[in-house]
Length: 221
Image 1: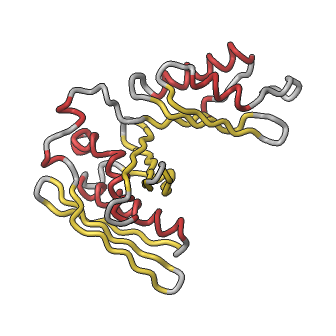
Image 2: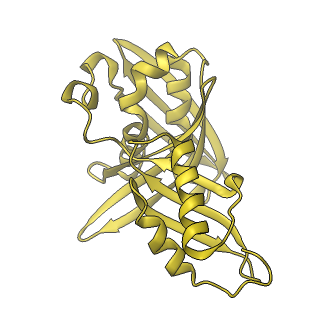
Image 3: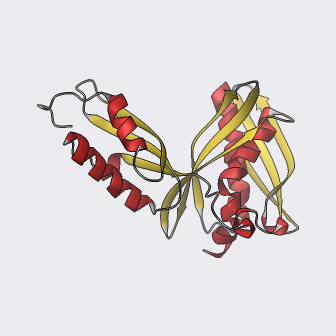
C-alpha cells in the first residue's frame, strides 16, 4: 500500500482475495503504517501458484489500487479433491505407513525419531530442538519429513512452515504446513489429521497427509 493512500481495512482485502477463483482462505499482515508486508493464501491446486499470485496482484490492484510485491505472497495448495480416485488414493505400496514414533526429552532438548514404511522398506528420520510445547510438535513433523527425504534419497528437501493442534468442535486435530523444495521450484501443502492415538501420531499423519498424494512424483522428480 502506498504511504499516502487512505488505509484499507485488512478484512476487506481478505474478503476480496477469497473471491478469487480457487482461493479458499486468506490472511493479510500489515505494518503499523498500514503497508502490506505479508499475504498468506490457501488455494486449490486448480491453477499454478504463479497464476494464483498474478490473480491476487490483479484483484488487489483492481479493487483497491494497491500494488503488491509478489515476493510477499505465500501460496499453500490444498489437496485436490477433484483428482481421479486412483490419484487421490495412490497404490498402497506408495503410501507411507507409520512403523514407529519415539520422542524423548533430556534436560531442555527434545528429540524425535519416526520410522515409516514405504514400498516394503523402512525409512527413518530424526530431529531435535527445544523442549517447549511448540518445539516438541515441530520435531515430530520434522522427523517425519526427514524419513521421506531418506525415501527420495535426498532428491528433494522440505521446510516445515508450521504445525499446530487445533480444536474442531469436540475433536482435536493436528494441522501441518510443509514447503516442498525441488528442481521444479517451491510449493506449500497443508495436511490435517484428527487425534486418535496420541498427539505425536496425529502430527505424523497430518504431515504425511500434506505430501502422501505426491510421493510418486517426489520419488521420480
